[in-house]
Length: 159
Image (cartoon, rainbow, N blue to C red):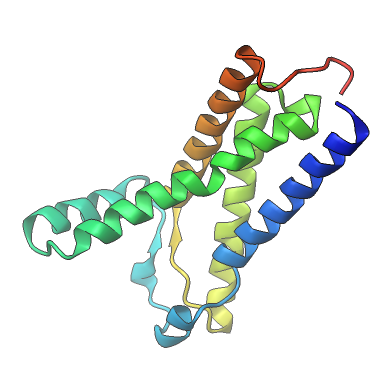
């Protein structure tokens, strides 16, 4: 990759990571209103997401939009990561490495959110977010592979 293109892609990755941090870690007006409750912590994979959809379709139809936005949002949030990582470094041209990085990053965000609960930031802590974020990075990596195969992205071996 030419130096100017590498700089642009690297800068894009850094900006993207800053946006992810601002969306997931920085307190919002909503997080200041709620107080931390243990029921906003989910360590059982699928539990919160399945309950959300079950309640949305059976008792509280107003939840449908929230459940869909939460699920799709968590997937879409990490999709760019799966595209950008292999463009920045050839070390991330294997799905396994992208998935490990995405899982560790998402898990780090959830741990930070958990710790910040003790300082008044009532963000939800949910293992489903880690799973959905990692899935998003996987889908992003698939997009990257399709773009390489269609020669939209060139994959230089010396990167």
